[in-house]
Length: 215
Image (cartoon, rainbow, N blue to C red; front, side, top):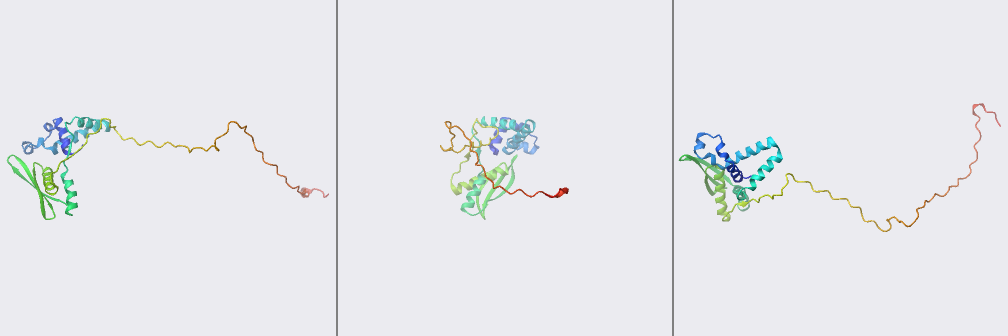
């Protein structure tokens, strides 16, 4: 839902490319249609909605626009998938060597991905990031065959703004046995304690304090 291609499509719906302030060089080279710039522009608009109207407004604004896309966004993170495959099969982490060159009126980037000292694939695109993704895709095709982007599922229309906490389990009292149940037929009675018979103690002698006369 938040990959560059999806955000760029949402920006194209709003024609954000025509509102970007760009330099003359990148503007003539097709910068207003670059996916990376369009994605950043849409993120800026979404951030403005959040600052002005709050989280819920930004949440619904994004989902409403996302649901109107003709197709779900595609996950084209070939670099991440290549890293996993290269580490599992080759025990190496891919490294990218990218260079840019001016081709006619626009700039083009070429990226070569290496695993150790061996090149795995090469990619060409208008941006460095896209060239690296193309190089990763070509490398995956050489290692595992044809590669298809993973589709991202659309959210359900019943999605809530915030996840609710699961309800606490209701406390249930243990089942009472027939012995514990009160009887309604018996008349309540009170058990009195038995009287305690104390031994008679001899009376203590009278005190002679305070000037009492002897007996």
